[in-house]
Structures are given as C-alpha cells and as structure tokens.
Length: 271
Ligand code: URA
Image 1 (cartoon, protein in one colour):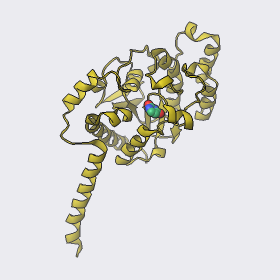
Image 2 (cartoon, protein in one colour):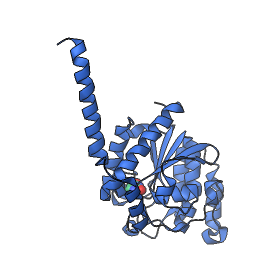
Image 3 (spheres, rainbow, N blue to C red):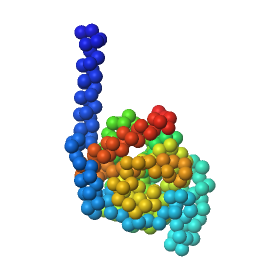
C-alpha cells in the first residue's frame, strides 16, 4: 500500500483512538451539562461539594490567620513562612507546624510532589488514606484517574506540581473545616510562589472556593480562567473523586482540561 492510501486510514485510526480515549475517560458525549450543573448544586455528600465559606484574605496575601486562634507558637511559625526560599525549607517548616494538623491523630505530612519548576500546578482538597500512608498527594483511586486525565492532555505526572489545600488528612475524609483551610493557606501560598507556575488547576469546590475566596458552586467557578493574586491564572474543574461517582461531570471536565492545555501552550508552558 502506498502512502497516499495509508494516510487517510491512519487519520481515521487516530480519530477513532482519540474518541475512544475521550469516551473511556470522560463518558458519554450526550451528557447534558445543564443537568450536571443542577445535580452538583443538589449534592451535599460529594467531596467536591458543600463547604462553608472561608475567610481567605490569605488568597491575596500570605498573612497568618487570626493570631489569638493560633497562639504564640503559631505566630512564630507564620513569621517563618516567607523566610523559606526553597520548597525543601518550606517542607521542613510544615513538618513541624502543628497548625497544619487536623483532629485525626498520627497523620503524616503530605506536602506536595512533582516538578519544582512546573508551569502547571494542581491543587486538590486534602490527603485521603492512601495519600497519608504514602506521604504523597493523589496516589489513591482519584489519583489514578488524575494521572489519566493528565495523560489525555499530554502531561506526565512528574512534569507538573501537585499539592492540596490541607497537608494532613482529615478524619473520615470529611471536608476540610474553614479554620483548617485558613491555617493552611499561608503555607500553600508560599508553596505556589516558590513553584511559580503559569497556570493553576483547582480540583473541586473546596479548592476553588478556598483559593478564589468565593462561596460559589463549582459550576459557577469552572470553565474560565480567573486572575489569581495578580501573578497567576487559575482554572477550576471537578475533583477526580467526584468524577468516579458522577460520570455526568466527566464531559465538562474534559472541556476544562482541553482549555487548560490550550492556554498552557499559548503561554509557552514547558514542556
Ligand atoms: N483528594 C485530594 O483532594 N487530594 C489528594 O491528595 C487525594 C484525594
């Protein structure tokens, strides 16, 4: 067979491969996004849903939360955040920061993982059981789906940087409390500045609400780039754990991550 006969066949094979990959990752194309958004509003048990507003002026500055709630020892630790000039220094500080702990005893720090100079940073909600065991974000079932989502838009896991709003696991994987998010945020903001990505992908409602300091549904926050702290652009999308339970959200997620890849390339993101 000569090349002119092979090319159309190859093109068709590529299209079939792309569509079946999209379908297996993101579900049926006929899913109605309006219904998906409506169901998100109705859901209260999903880990990317219902959360109380959090006072997050920290999303704009790295100021510590109210001093009286955190105590004097905490004052000292917040004073040290901006003295950390590397991720290693910040991780060492986080390791001794009791203010980052939840009320679950014996958890280990899940600081963050990936390329320290990444142009794309992903921010989830909080570590789960597997993440706590391994000390690494997104290594459980949701993490496996996240790796597939990244692969579908041509990123390898180790090319990006991944962190969470909380650095310790909450008991029974409950949503992070507003005060836990508030105490963790100055550490996360320093971490973001040290990585200095071009783009941030916020995974789930807790992450988006905390970083954007908005008490909105995810369907209202997703799908567009938000300016973030004058330096970054932030896109919010559904949390992979939510996609495992609600396949109707896969299609809008697919659109979001396509948008993310396009913007990343426009901004000259590497690789
Ligand atoms: N969910 C998250 O938000 N973060 C993790 O690290 C794992 C699951």
